[in-house]
Amino acid sequence: MIRPYSETGSKKEQVTTMFDNIAYRYDFLNSFLSVGIDRRWRKKALQPIRQEKVEITLDLACGTGDFSFTILKMLKPLQVIGVDLSEKMLEIAQSKTRKMKLQEKVHFIHCDCENLIFDSNKFDLVTVAFGVRNFENPDKGIAEMFRVLKPGGIVVVLEFSKPKGALRSKLFKFYFNRILPIIGRMVSKDISAYRYLPESVNVFPSGKEFQAMLETAGFVDLNMVQMTFGVATAYYGRKPR
Image 1 (tube, rainbow, N blue to C red):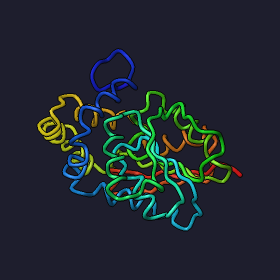
Image 2: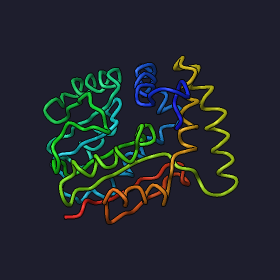
Image 3: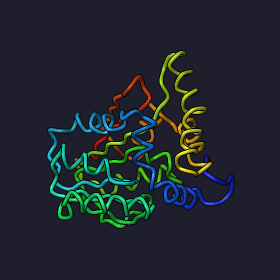
Image 4: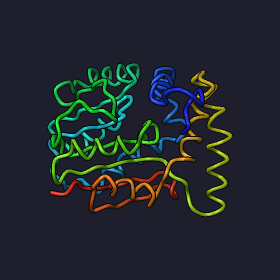
């Protein structure tokens, strides 16, 4: 198991500390390091489900709220609830909500994604963008997604993946393993955070391996869409009716 700071101890606690540490520069670094592509990834991940009727959505590992706001804009649900363990990230998300005057539509709650406080069969859609690889127990987190979804509800997971092809793979690894940690460390002042990112992506089960995890949890109608030559992948599943 890859952890941000130490090979021992709780990954959950270390990840929470890491995001608290980098929260104030998180949005800038996301946009800068991905050259703004991260915004397109979020929109593209929601495109295949735009015709679905979505009234209430749960956005896990919501961070500073960007995916929650994208969901509200594109799918127009009655309510979006975002949850995260990092209180510093949630403070920024809540500040954005107040600035956009969306307090009646979007709510952010401090909550463990692997031990959700919500009743079963509550949400039409559960999403998580670039967060599953940070779970201490991904299988438990996926099981919780399944539990809180209504029968017929949809899960969308957007996550980094490893591009195919020798040249693309080499360029991806060079940028992720050499360039990104240096820039991340200089801007965020956290030596470990942007070293952890490429390490966590390298060990995360992507493609059909991750689909198998969704299938084991009970999801059906599985599908996936690769983006930017496979640098990111959106995974889809449905809870049986």
